[in-house]
Image (cartoon, rainbow, N blue to C red; front, side):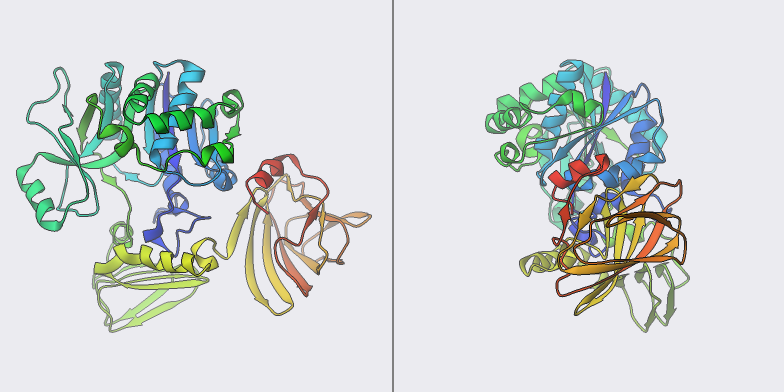
Length: 486
C-alpha cells in the first residue's frame, strides 16, 4: 500500500493578513486561482498506484478542506481525514499517520508525507523523485527530499550530504547531518561547497520503520501518540473522518519530525531533486509568482501606481493607489492592511504575535467565516446592529435554533431559501424577506442545487455568536459542534 499523507496544520503567520489561524496558509489562492491545499491534493492524486489520500488537519478546517477537495477529487480515490483538536507540530501528525497506515494496511505500508503549503512546479520531476524515494523506503530507509539550492537562503534548514551516492540509487545519499537555518555567510559557503541541500519537509518511509525509529529516539512522544490514538476509530477515518481526543492529544509533545526522528536516526536518506519547489514562506515568495510590470511592481487586484517601483501590491476588494514609493509590500484585505519593507517581510509574524497578545480578532479570523453549511461575511456592525452576507451551500442547512437577545431580518439575494420561522415553513425567492423575532425557533435551508445568498440584519442589545440555543443538529453539522464551531 502506498499512502500519500497531506499535513495541513501550518498557520503561515508570515503571510498575514491573508493567512490567519481560522483561514491558514494552505487555503490561500495562488495567482492562478488555485489554493496551495488543492495543489497538494492534485499532486498526490496524480502519482501512480494511489488508492487513498489521508489528510491530517485541525478539526476547525475539516469542512473547508473537504470543500477544497470536492471539485478535484478523482472518484476512484478515497479521501480520509484525522482531525486534531488543536495545532501540534509535525512529529505528532506524522506519527498519527504512521499508526493509521500500520493499523489499516500493515507496517510495510509506505507513506509519502506532503506539506499542504508548498508549490512544486515540475510535476514530472516530482513523480520521478517519489519513485526513487519509494524504492529506498522499501529498503527500510527513512527518506527525506532535498532541494538543490538556487541561492544563499537563510530562511530554510539544510541537509549536508557526502560525496558518494547510495548504491544503486540515481540521486540519493545517506544524510550526513541536518543543519538549522544559517546566517548569510554560512549559507553562501554552503552554496559554494555544493554539498548542502534545502530541507523540503517531504518524507517517504514504511509506517513500521518510522514507528520503530520514533520509539527508539523519542520514546516519550512515541508513548504519548500511542495513547492519543488508542481510542481513535481508524475504520471511521478510512470512511470519512475521525477526531483525536483533546485530553490525550494535549499530552503529546509539540516537536518537529526532524527533531524527533530524522536528525537522530542512522537510517535517513535524502533524495536530491530539482522539482521547482517553493515553500511560499513570505510575501516576497508570493510576489515571485506574479509577472512584474515595467517598473518591477507585482500587482494583484485593482491597483494604480505612479512613480512607484519594486513593490508587491495586492488588494482583494478596494482600489489601492501608490505614489512615489519603492520596494514596499502592501497587502489590503477588508479588515486589515499590511505595509512592509520588502527586506523585512519575515518579521510580519511579530505583528501577529502582538495581535494575539492583545486578543485581537484579526489574528484569528477574516470578516468572512467558513462554516460546515457555507460561510458568512460581516458587512458592517455598530451599536445594536450587525449586517451579514450569508451563503448556504446546495443541499445544506443550518440547525434549528433561537436567539434570546436579537431579532433577524432575512432578505434573499439569489437562490431559493427554505425557511422555518417559528411554526411557519415556507420558501423565499430573490427580493423576498422574513422577520425572525427574538425567541422564535428558526432554520435556514437550501434544498436547491445552487448557492443561496441572503443578507441578514441583526438588531438587539447583544449580538455575540454565542447567543444561540440549538434544538437539533443536521448531520453535516454535528461534528463541527465538537470542534467548537458556532
